[in-house]
Length: 354
Ligand SMILES: NC(=O)c1ccc[n+]([C@@H]2O[C@H](COP(=O)([O-])OP(=O)(O)OC[C@H]3O[C@@H](n4cnc5c(N)ncnc54)[C@H](O)[C@@H]3O)[C@@H](O)[C@H]2O)c1
Ligand SMILES: [Zn+2]
Image 1 (cartoon, protein in one colour):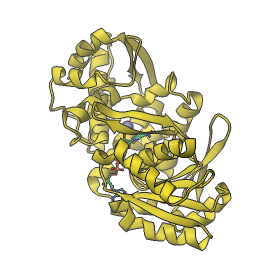
Image 2 (cartoon, helix red, strand yellow):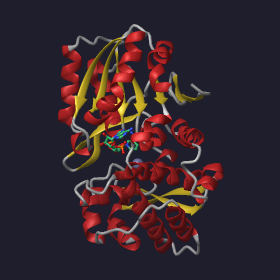
Image 3 (cartoon, protein in one colour):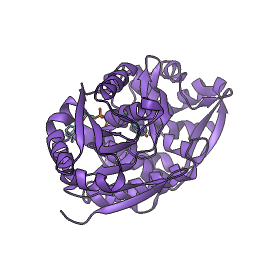
Image 4 (cartoon, helix red, strand yellow):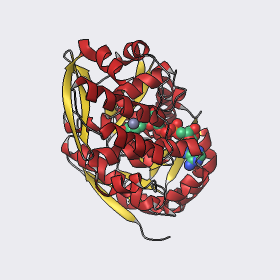
C-alpha cells in the first residue's frame, strides 16, 4: 500500500474525504471504521462489480467487525430505475438496516447514483459511502452528492442531493475496465480540463491522462469539488459542469442509450461549442482547441442525429426553468460562462451546433 491522497470536500454542515490510493479496496473496513459509527451496512453492486470486487470489500469489512449484506442488480444504465431503487429499499428493510446504518455503492456511476438515491430516501435518509470502480465514477459521479434514477422521458429525472460520508478509490480497479469505459471517463476529464484549464488541461493536451492515474483523478476531484462547494444546489456556477450535457443527454436519448454518456458528452461539447460560436458570432479558435483535445485522446465526436431529432429529445432537460435554459459559453480554456437563452430558441441553438 503506497501513499494515499485525501481530498476533503465541505458540504452544508459536514465534510467528507475522497481517499485515493492503490490497495484502498482491501482497507475498506479499516478506513470506514474511521468515518462511520455504525457497524452494519448494505453493499450494493451490479453483477459485474459484485463478481470482481465484492469479495475483497466484504472480507475487509467483516475483518473490521462490520455486519454486511449484499444487494446485486443487473449492470447497465437500463437498470438505473425506480424499480431497482425500490428493490434496494426492500432488501435493506429485509436486512433490518436501521437509522445510522449505511449503504455502500461499489461500482460505476449507475451503482453510485442509485445507491445514493436509495440511501437518501431509506428511513428518510441514511448515510452512504461511494467506492467508484469506473474512471467516470472516480472523476465525476462519486463526488458532489447528486443521486437519482432515470425516468422513461429522460435521464436522472428523479433524485435527490445526498452527500456521501466518504469516497474510496483504488486505481487498481481500472485494470479490468474495458477500453470504451476508460474513454467514458476521459471525456468528463477533458470537460474538467476545458472548464478549469491549468495542469489538467496541460496533461489532457499532451494525451497523457492515464499516465499518473492517482494524480489525474485527484486533479479532477479537486476541480469538481470547487464547483460543488461554490454552488451545492446547482443553481449557479455548478451548471458549468453541464458543458456538453444539454446536447449530450439528447444524443443519449436519441440513441435509446446505446451511445454511452461520456461519448455523448464529447459530441455534446463540440456541438455546444459550435452552437455558441454561431449564436453569438464569436471569433474564436476554441472549437479547434476542443476538437484537437478530443482527437489527441482518441475520442470521437461526430453526431449521428439531426437537429430536429435532438431538439425533440432535449425538451425534458432539467436545466430548463421558467421558459429559459442556461447554456455554457466556452470563451476559452479555463474561461467558461453561463448564458441564458429562451427555450423557444432551443431548436435554433441545437441546429447551430450540428
Ligand atoms: N451523480 C453524478 O454527479 C453523476 C455524474 C456523472 C455521471 N453520472 C451517472 O453515471 C452513470 C455512468 O457511470 P459509468 O460509466 O460508471 O456506468 P456504469 O456504472 O454502468 O459502469 C459501466 C460498466 O462497467 C462495468 N464496470 C464497473 N466497474 C468495472 C471494473 N472495474 N471493471 C470492469 N467492469 C466494470 C459495469 O458493470 C458496467 O457494465 C450514468 O448513469 C450517469 O448519469 C452521475
Ligand atoms: Zn456527465
